[in-house]
Amino acid sequence: MTLWLITDVDVEFDQLRYNKLEASRNNLGLTKGLPLLLEFFHEHGIHATLHMQEQANPELSIIERYPKLYDMIDDYGQEVSLHVHIKEESYERRKKEIRSGYNRLKERGYNIESFRAGWYFTNENTIRVLEELGIKFDASPLKGITIGNKKFYNIPDSPYHPSYSDITKPGSASVLVIPVTDIRLGIGIHKKNRYEDVLIEKGIKTLAAKAQEIKEPVIVYFTTHSWKPLTPSGKIREWEAKRREHFMKCLSKYEYKTLTVSEAGELWEKNKYQPYFLDLPHNALKVYPWYSFRRYDFFNRYVISNLHILRYKLFGKL
Ligand SMILES: [Zn+2]
Image 1 (cartoon, rainbow, N blue to C red):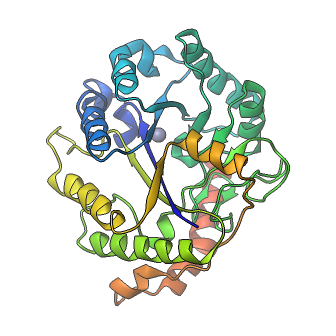
Image 2: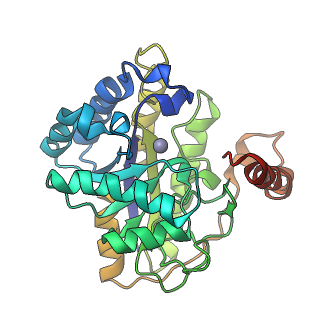
């Protein structure tokens, strides 16, 4: 079939980077980081989705504090989506927080179709709230992680309609989940690490080959954060900019279609594609000679994930 590039950014207050309130005072990630990313997308003709942080607390609302950023996104013709951080699992809490962000954007004329949960922490209650609001796409699950009490190890490698009783399984919900699947292949704009460039190249090559084999589109997910182009002191991170360029250079060797989250979701629905699982190699094994993926995988699934769940149960922390 073909490769789809889905591109998005979690646009949020800098405090999310440091988990401290003081760090959010000047929010360079918003005022300096986001414009850099928008310009980069523009240069490469990328359709992107900007998941904008809007919490019930107006201090944590981008449209209240930085309304001009929305104008900038509109001028570049990119998609505005909703990004909400909620630690609690309950339907009531999720409803309150998501609805307040949704309504605030609606009042300013935005018809929101896509959503990304903070920390990728979505669940069945989130799906219910999104359905009530008419939000169609949830780009939250990150394949290969545990968050809260949820294990996103065995979700499909494609978009899917989740089950109302278990978001990690396909079912009959009308919201379409669009998982971020880059982690297993090591594709990403992560820490300063010379192996990342190799992983990006190998990962895209693997997905392009899969796209030749199967009848559905194969997704290359490019996801980042508004603060990522900057160092904590607000200087431009050279390695991060180079890595983005490298990503596009690797991708340009293949035929691909660039889509926002909602464009990808609409196209997926229109063509009635079915969810699938890809048998992917663990590329990390090949570039990190000392790295035992099996050991790492076992450790993550059984030890780390259970520790996370225990900590969550005891302290309510993610
Ligand atoms: Zn976030």
